Image (cartoon, rainbow, N blue to C red):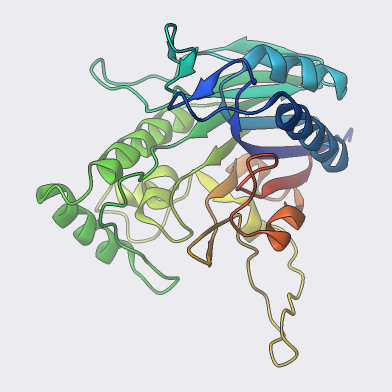
Length: 317
């Protein structure tokens, strides 16, 4: 049987915006030197990660990213949306996602949805040809962030689906968090589109929600929608759960398996960046690695680097 070793990554670039423009407010802008340093660091990361497929978030300057990816050996690069630009002040008001691939991108489709629904950031859905008789569908997403720091629930590995759904219902009924409402609707829309796919499917995303969250249930678990199901029935799996584990030993007294955070907020680490795979790829995951050296030096990250770690998953397809 012919096998392909496939390395894929999700990479939040943290305000990838050319020094000619500002992002969000007029005063937020890179100097020419800082912009060159940021691009050099991203290029260094991409070469270090050595992936064939990468999904990007927080992309303002699309042409510059395309050029950088081609310099790193990628053959195809796509976006499906344009960031909103305030022409008068040369200030971008929204970001987009992007996809770079060393394999041919065969087609791009819009994620199906209700007519009145819009994503905070339009996701990418692309069919990629790994070889003549093998195609995969790759989604790139950046779900709604909670910028207003509205109240949202935190769950643990012991939280049941019933508890999560009950608290979500309360939150939506009382309008505790409009961000959560938008994020759940984005997760639902992706769930039903992914469920229809016939080819093996991968989702590369900045989820803007944590491990064990109700957002992950809405995205991956059919039991979230079908009360009659007695057991979980997943359409997607977190690649971290499928990969062999390494013992993480930050303190002499602790020896155990601990997930490496991909982002920090007020000194607390969270996993916000995920690679999910469909059932067909469940037994294909060989490794899951977090590139977080820059966050070990500075948990808040740096605009010249990123405030997120990069996640890389290796598959044998």
